[in-house]
Every structure is written in structure tokens, then in C-alpha cells.
Length: 233
View 1: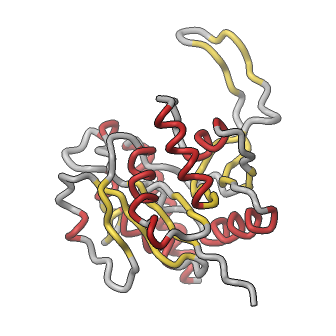
View 2: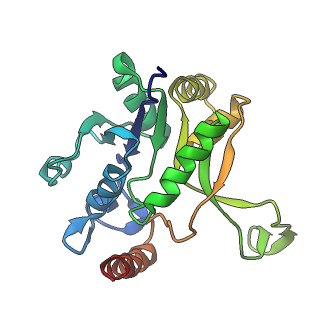
């Protein structure tokens, strides 16, 4: 009998959200009666393939322990200065009972659809290679600083989203290698790419936005209300 594939989720949540201009991290903003982080964890908890959630928060975080996470299999780990540090800390924390695969999702993406997550997992497991949710770029893209210097062909351009999904040891090794080489990486996929490994692009909904600015928060609040209405129909 084949051993079932084990999958853990990591949510890096140690950022301070400086671009929001707040006196507390953006993941603790409320949408309705729950924080952004609670909405995000609630979505992940509905994915049947996930066995455990690891949330990486700052050592000085005084908000996480006040959340209502009853019924969720969540472990708190200490985050780092950069996103990659937080993810690596979480991977090391689960090393003694390492899962086969790890799903990494932004704390500030509460609008992700469960169907997109399960599709990402299924596509990657079928092809036995890591991958990310991404959406095709729709707008005309310009390159430049103060003036447009070039119009960039968009036929092969994608906007990277999360979750991002990789075999546990592949991601662990890629992040450790990137750290040793002082490589500048912005997401898990960039570390895996630097290690010379394939990263599958799996189409996801473009409204899976990351809350970074006040405008994002206003849009996310509206979209979440629309999601709630749709579920109640």
C-alpha cells in the first residue's frame, strides 16, 4: 500500500506592513469580524490535503496569541528579518517530522480560492515538480524609471501569486543555498529557480491579491464581501 503524501503549510507573517502606514502589522487588520490572518488561516484549514499549519511571526509579535484559532492545527514559529528567513525557520522547525511537500502562502492573501489551492497541489503531484499559482499579465507593461524606455512583450509574462508548492527537501535545500550565497530572492520559486529546478506555472484567479497598500485593503474588503454573498446564495 502506498504511503499517503503528507503536506504542511507555512504562512510567513513576520512583516510589519510599513507601506500600510499602520502602528501594527497589516495581517492584523480586520475585515468584518476577523483579522486578515484569521481569514487566511481559515481558508487553508479547509484544504483537506493539508495536515498542519505553521505560522512564522516576529519575536515581538503581541497580536498572534490573541487570535481565535480554536479548531485549527496551527504551530507558531519565530520568523526572521526577510520572508525567506521566516520560511526557512518554519521548515527547520518541522524537520524532525518533515512532510513530503510544503505549501507556502502569504499571510496577506485572504482571498485565495480553495479550488485554486487544490488544483495547484494536484498539478504538482501529478507532474512531480514544484509550482506556483500565477496569473497571466493583462496590462501593457513598460520598462523605465521616470520615462518609458521600452514596452515589454507580455505573451510570456505571469504575475506570481501564492500558494507556492514544493517538495520539502527541495525547498529547504534551495533556501539554504540561497542564504549561503547571499542571493536576493523574493519568493520560494526564485530560490528553486536559482537552484536550477523547474517551477510549474498553474493558473490562478487574479483577484487573489496581496494586501500591501490601503488601496489593496479597500479592494480586499469589497471582494471578500462579494465572496461571502456568493457562498450564501
